[in-house]
Image 1 (tube, one colour):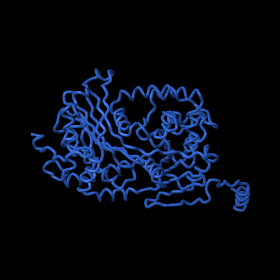
Image 2 (cartoon, rainbow, N blue to C red):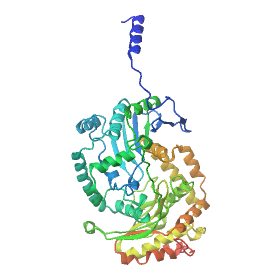
Image 3 (cartoon, rainbow, N blue to C red):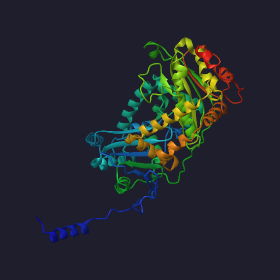
Image 4 (cartoon, rainbow, N blue to C red):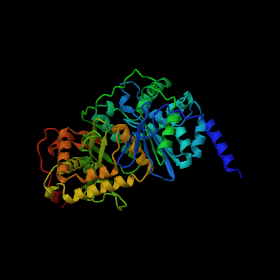
Length: 499
């Protein structure tokens, strides 16, 4: 065994020979802010925002979020580039071939993903704690040093073309997308979130590089880690993004404000679906919503939970929302309705809120009045005629809190929540604070927010099926008190609807 003095001498020589890790990106190893729930936040000198949750676990999770997305594509004539770039994630880089990247991912369990949306492109992954450095290297390389070879681009264009075809045949995917486009006139947050056939043909390497130069820059990047000590997270970020610079420092990104227009669009049932089983028709009705930072967000979230969503068949069980209005007032009462869903989308400057229903073809006309009456009832203070009750409010708040807490048990869900909050709000709201805000919502708040949404704008309508059978949708919704300056209308007597 080595003597103590000899060990000390060896250690001292080793320390003297070490090269210090340069702190080129930050001036301090301490966080700028520690939030109520212990999340540590820091902005590096080059603009990268770092968020770290040190909660110990057997796994570490890494997320990287780019402030970009399809809402910018129209202005810069880069249609479809967001979608294709997320397909090009984890391919060859300046330091590694695509085979080497694939081998690294396989050794880590290959638990990585990337996706694009209207306001974000995200990269996420998880690994065992000792492997987090390798995971971070692969992800940071994919963001800061991709080669984007012609072969890779052509291969992903082929894959994307197939994916587009699949989306077009999936009503549950394509109809909400079309509703968003119609609601905002096909611009900014109404611009397609996925690449279209026409856009795909025009995409080339030059456009993809232009997109990256505009949006892939330190000031637009949020890095979040979970299950990693803050010091290690900071070191990984500094090392992984050393040399990552703004390629267009003099160019300011223009973010056009979202403008709600409303409107209507109808689609035929695709021939490929018409003979695959029982044919269903769809009706989507949406209204101008609220941005993600609006104080009424929690009220609208409770209202969405109170309405709920579901289909004519459910295995039941706790947390399924079997006592939500979608079941108690629609699915359990009307056999011609196959599904009923409340939906909400929120962006930095606007959003959508509404209901969709799927029915058998012969019920098209009835579904319009059924949907209109249900929305009308949400604005009524009269419980005997379908107005919101205190019990419903209490149940919806409990269910929303339960869903929130259970979802955040997932490391990747918690990771994305943390990263997206920092990206959009530049702050982190704790679960405790969220639950407190949910608890503060009262019955009158829900009636008020329902009235604000359903009478604050004219509806956006998307139909898939025989348009003529649906009749005058806008006029009949208006007769139920829905839309701007619509006459007030009492909801139909619920007992008459169900007897």
